Image (cartoon, rainbow, N blue to C red; front, side, top):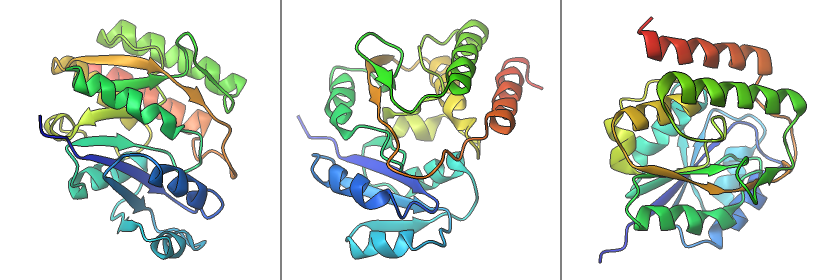
Length: 224
């Protein structure tokens, strides 16, 4: 059996306080490629990443979804894993995600809301919002996952490429499971513990991004 190449895509935007620790952890894993997609940081993030010997792709557009799509276009791996740059994703989960793919699944989602999982970075507002959006995602679109806004996922590159994903912002997190489910791809979840971010503040605005996610949940269902 030919070993599949694995690419981890890390979108960055002014992550100078976090990125070195994240990259050092990732370098200790068995992934084949670590690809930084930078949204034009002005704090020295890209310079540091290059000094550490990692590949940097400059993002042409804006937003989280755009960064992930850019990374997929440039990735050499057969399996893609997007990962946040703030240190909240635990690289120790990567073998468990990949095991799901090895066992025949097309997509593996990490979840903070399964038994033996949790979060050290959740807030009350984020928790409530996520539970509401997860309920709507499952109810409206027939998806069956427990954590809709935690896109710590491993999937075959061909899955990403076949779904015609167009979201530029954080609504990408729900577009992916909706379209993967509708396309009939096999998926499952593993428990994950979200760590406290190393530094900085979340770039997600609860009201602005929450409103966009709600709109797209309805748009993709009713073809608005």
